[in-house]
Image (cartoon, rainbow, N blue to C red; front, side):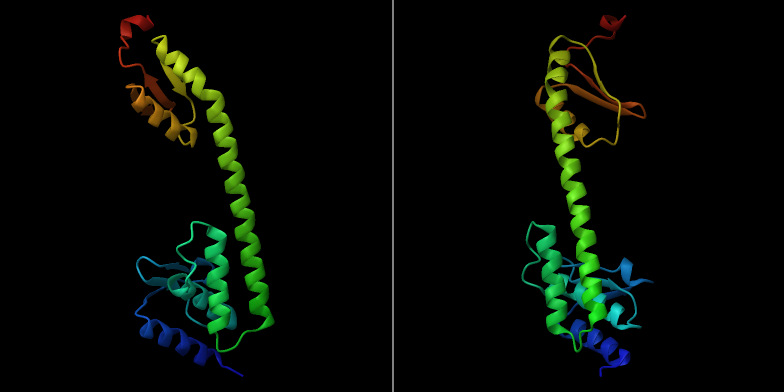
Length: 183
């Protein structure tokens, strides 16, 4: 059976062999890996779980699927790489993989649903905004952090409108707006 000490040394050896920079974080749940920087941020190897997490982050640097635009393809590829390159793999590690992938899939589904809701709201708002600007009045979006704001600001620039953001939201003025018109 492989010891935790051997697992830790394996991580260090892999990083040295592949010229991957290591920085340390307190817990495996905070680990990350960057293909572009050839760097990983991992917890010290104190158990098979922290070993699996470290291998997974190395997988984010070395696995061939990491340039995919699909987040889940990158995650599955990094876990496959980790399992294929481990000195030993346990059922607890398999459970960790299943838990992580399920969590990522749920998060990805929520992000996709949020994007769809944002697109639907933008489809409803866009004609109102254009009509408002064409008639020379100000258009106000009340949620400054709303993803729709990016679309509105982009369209405002195309329509040669002025965009002003404050705590109450985003104000979009037509190019020919005169404050005396508002009174």
